[in-house]
Image (cartoon, rainbow, N blue to C red; front, side):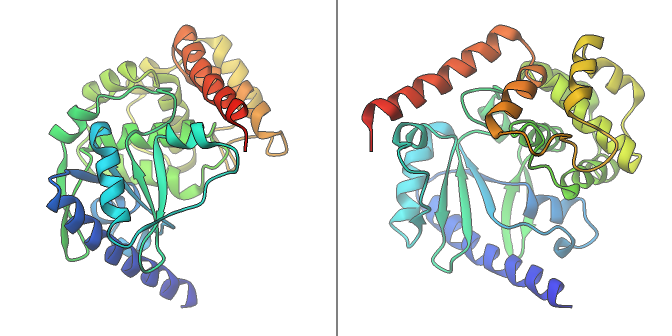
Length: 287
C-alpha cells in the first residue's frame, strides 16, 4: 500500500510540474513531447500508475532549447546542480536537469543522447507525434516506432548499465499493445546507427518476456558473429542485470561496449572526439 501511495504521489507531482511546462512552453510557441514514463503509462499499461518513474522527460526542438530553458527558469523552476568542473560538457549537454516549484525533477531534452552518438531526425519526430492524456492535460508523445527507437537509444547510451526490468517490460508491452510498423522502425534504426543496439534490447525482451518481435526483424538487426561474440562477453540478454560486469569502472565499461552498439566505426570515432574535445575544454577552463 505504501509503495502504491508513493507512486500515485509521484504521478500527481509530475502532472503538476507538467501543467506549468505546458502553459509556459505553449505561451512561447514551443511545441514539446513528453517522453517515456507518462506516455508509456497512458498508452501501453493497463493503468497509468503501473508505470512508475522518478522524473519527467520533455523534448523540445534543438533550436528552441535555450528559449524553453529560460522560460521555465523564469517561472519557478531551478537548475539541478551538475558535476563540478564540467562547464563545457554541461553547456553542450543533450539535456538539463531542473527542479519544479513543487520539487519534482524534470529533464529538458534537445536530443535523445549526447555527442550525436545516435543521430535522429528530430523535426520528423515532431511531425509524427501522437496525442495522449497526461492526467487531465492533453499532451503529445512519440509515434510507436519512434517511441521504440527512443527506448533503444535510452538503454544503449549507458551501455545497459542503468537498464531496469521496467525498461524491457516497456518494450514488451509496446510491441504488444501498439501497432508497430517494422519497416519504418528498421529504416530509422539504420539512419540512427542503432541497429545493433536495437537487436540487444529487442532480443532481451524476447528472451525475458517472450515479446512479439518477428524473427525476421531480429535477423535484419543482428550484427556480425564477431560483434555478437564480443557483446556476449559483457552483456546477457536472458536476465537482469544485462551488463555482466557491474564492478567495472564506468569509463572501462563504456570503452568495451559502446563501440559494439554504435553502427559505423568512424561515426563512433567522431562521437568520441566530440566528447574528448569538451572534456579538454573543461580541463582548460579549470574550476
